[in-house]
Length: 164
Image (cartoon, rainbow, N blue to C red):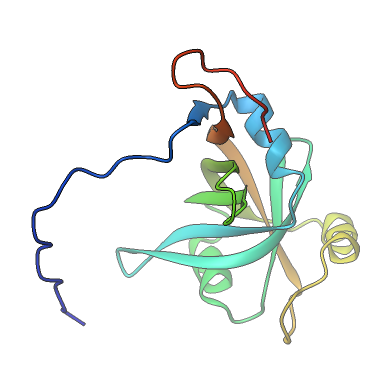
């Protein structure tokens, strides 16, 4: 599919919502926030292009654990690598579309298949698939880089306000 959008016509520069601030999060706070939601998006390479899949997750000792459906693209990628780690990114957020407040976190690191039977069984109880199909495997993402931001109310001049 090689559709290229037509360039937008020139207009006035875009301006953000008055009184909104975007603060960068530290890695510890970002990882903590990631643990407060159940759904995120895993980003991996498929045919040399980025692929994104929504998945539910759980945090376990700083690692992000997701279940993968049997026969899925991600399961096939990990089995093709035979124990080799695959570079991935994982994104989760909680941004209210009405008031435009919230946060977004991206964790970048290496994904490996979980192979220890006891861990697979434990994750099977912690993570119920959200879609029909068999999900007998699990993936461990060990984040090397965790970044995030928070959109909050605040004074443009003082940077204070309530955080979400």
